Amino acid sequence: MTLKSHISGWSLFFLAAFSPGVHLQRHGSSSQPSSDSELPSEAQISRPVLQPSEAPPSTGTYLLNDRVGKPCIRATMGAEYIVTEKKKTWYFNLDPSSVKTGGNCDKETAVLSLTLPNQAASLQFTFRKENNFIYVTNVTAHVSPQPVCQGCANKTYSGVITHKKLFTAANSQSFKCKSGKLLLMSSELKIRLVPLQMQAFSVPNRDYGPKMECWADFNKRAIPIILGAVAVGLVVIALLTFQFIKDRRRPGYDRI
Ligand SMILES: *[C@@H]1O[C@H](CO)[C@@H](O)[C@H](O)[C@H]1NC(C)=O
Ligand SMILES: *[C@@H]1O[C@H](CO)[C@@H](O)[C@H](O)[C@H]1NC(C)=O
Image: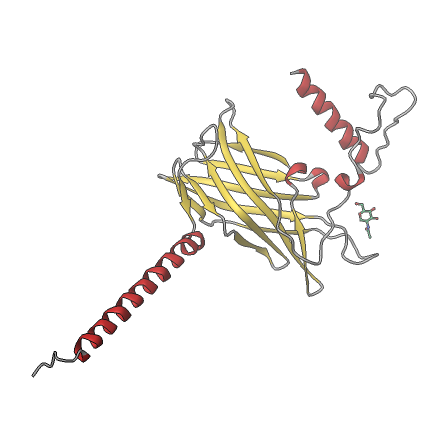
C-alpha cells in the first residue's frame, strides 16, 4: 500500500515535471527526496528515434490481472514499428523495460494496453471471447517519434484495425507464432510482432496453456519432415530400380 502510493507519487512528479508549462522546483522548499539521480534519463523521456535499418526487437512478457488479481492476459512479444515517411522506411523497436502495461478484463472483452512514458508510443489489443474461441478483434497503435529530418514538424503515426479475427485460439489455449505477424495499421504504419504468444481470459498463473500454432510455424516444422520423407522415398525407389536392373542383367538367369 505504502509502496503503491509512493510509486504513484513519483509518477505524478514525473508527469508534472515533463508536462509542458509545468516547472517543478527541485530546490528551495520542495519536499522531494534530495537526490536528483533518480530522475529518468533524457533517453527515457524524449521522443523515440526512428532508425533507418532494422534490428530484431527485444521480447517482453506483459501480464494483466483482473479485478480479483487473477491473470487474465499474458502476452509475450517483440514489437517493431515500421513507419513510411518521405518514401523511406524507418524502424522503431518497443523496449519492454520502459513499457507500462494497462487494460481491463471483462467477461467477453479484454484489453491490453502497452504504452511508453509521455505517450511516445502505444500498442493496444482488444480480445473477444466468442463461444469457445478467443481472438483479437481490434488493434490500435501510435508512435510519436523525433522528426526524421531536422526542423521537420513533429508527427504522430497511428493506425487501427477493427472487426478482425486475429490470433485465434481455443479457450484456455494460447496463440503462438514464432515466425511473427505483420499488421498493416495504416498507409504509413505497420507493426511487426515477432515472436508472438498470447492468451486471454483464462490464463494459467505461470506460463501459457497448450498452444495453437500459426501456419508459418507449422510449415517451418512440417516442410523439412515432408522433404525428408520425399528424399527417403526417392532413395528407396532408386535402390529398388537398381536391384531390378541388376537382377535382369545377371548372366545365366535368362528368362525366355
Ligand atoms: C517537437 O516536439 C518537441 C518536444 O516534444 C519540441 O521540443 C519541438 O520544438 C517540437 N518541434 C517542432 C518543429 O514542433
Ligand atoms: C473495435 O473497434 C470498433 C471501432 O472502433 C468498435 O466499434 C468495437 O466496439 C471495438 N470492439 C471491441 C470488442 O471493443
